Image 1 (cartoon, one colour):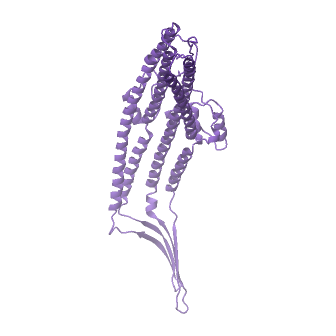
Image 2 (cartoon, one colour):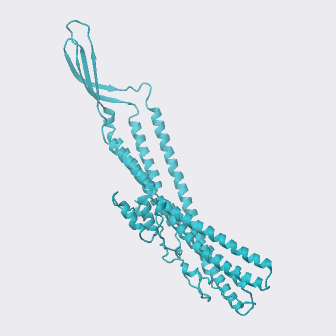
Length: 455
């Protein structure tokens, strides 16, 4: 069921599971590999498999007859020459025999529901892995960007110190540049901490201990696809593929069957049939059948009927409430994906290219002594800020898309983009000329050519 929704659970034995995990960790980590590791190593999956084993045991138990009951008694006589009275009997629960097919059917229905819940739990774990993976990739890219910003701020502070020493700027301007450099260093430290936290969060959700965090994830954030998903199609997919919804509806069907069984057996609490053998005091022997049947004089099963009916009504209400939540979640998640996609497009196609052009034009004006270096540094900082917002918007898009896929219960119809945000376009480089592309934002230049030393 998980494989039909794009989640491949590796088929391994307990003996080779550790080897498969080590092999996956030895390669560059991808979202699919991270999910495969989690499905093998995360203790949540062990608990899920244990639940399946428990439900399977219920099916096995429901298909077996109850053990027969053996009873025996002995009565000691005081009569001279008489023997003691002895009797024994063997009885089988007759009602248990009659309800055996129905009980087996209910146990199998409950096992099918448990399977749906287990597959749904695997899907939820896979979604958690995807969120942690994209969160880590974004945190690493932001940390690299913060490092570039901090380096640029240090250059600005060093240049300000030279200008102040030459008497060209005030001590206030120097303090402003130095404080900006210090703040950039603090932001860099915070970004490094966020990157490490995201790395261990991914390591934890994969089910790995802290000493196995040496894996590498070289991937960058993919760019969003050019088109979105149709909301009507998404609602149809959710109604068809949400495993928890199928489990809730399966529980309703099981309780309907259970109510029918309760109606059929409401007048009989217990019934058993067997054989009894007795030896009397005169040594005569009596053997014959034995029947035990409860009489519905005071209890005609009204309580059991009401309880079964109430449980069924509650299950129907829970299923209806779940569908209401799912349909609204799909609608909300689709709207969030659309909004996140719009933010990415504006940042990629407008703000980042404009900030890059501003840096290039400011560099040209500085070369002709029309503006000073600090104007260029300010333009550079604004360009870096646009890139930061672009990375965060792309991260938010993929997190929203993961939520949408989870809300629909499987993969989305629109394929993911294979292109990524290349960090080589964000880290410092020498090319100051503006570039543009329909697929990626122009790259910010970070190499500063300072004005001649005023001294």
